[in-house]
Every structure is written in structure tokens, then in C-alpha cells.
Length: 126
Image (cartoon, rainbow, N blue to C red):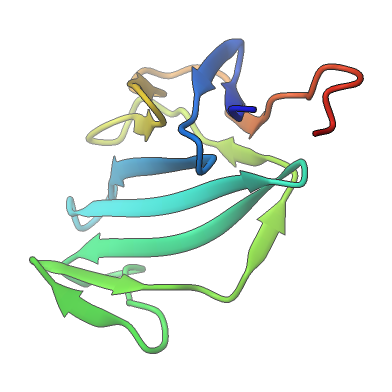
């Protein structure tokens, strides 16, 4: 069964590993921030984070390493039922979320975007 992710009213298909990447530009430092998440057991699990450069609020995590211009680290397991993303329209970019395809959300001022796993159809617990 393939996993999917709901972002507001939109659905994004995920690959067989159930992972997605979220990327945005830091509002102060204007540098790229990336996170890799997995959908597992009805929760979102942060697997890896990466920041291009470093600066205010962009310190790499413990045991991070520098690779291809990014500080990369694997945070302690963090499972959440949803992510709430601000959508002020005042930042350099929106949120780019990639599963099997990509979509950009929150580039203009609007209500916060809630990201959560899709609900599994009844009887599809394989």
C-alpha cells in the first residue's frame, strides 16, 4: 500500500518508503532548510534535517556533518500526528513538499496549513 499526505485539502502521493521532503527558505538568513519525514503508524516522523549554511536559528543538530554545502543531521525520533505550517506571505518562499511529485504551499498570506497522514481506508490494515 502506498502512503499519502494531506496538506490542507490537497493530497500528495508518497513513494513505497512513505517518505516526503519539505523545503523552505529561512525567513532571516535566506538559506535553504530541508527536512525528510516518513509516514508510519499514522504519524509523521522526522528522519533527517539539513540547512545550507548556518546562522540565526539555523544551528545544525548534534553529530551533524557538512556535505555538498549543507549541514545535515538525523534528529532523535520525533513522531507527531500533524504539522502546522505558517502561511504569512511575508517570507521569501512558501513550503515545497515533495513525495512522488512536488507542490508549493503557503507562498501567499492565508490560514496555516495543516499537514497530516491520509487516513487509511477501513479494512486496509495490511
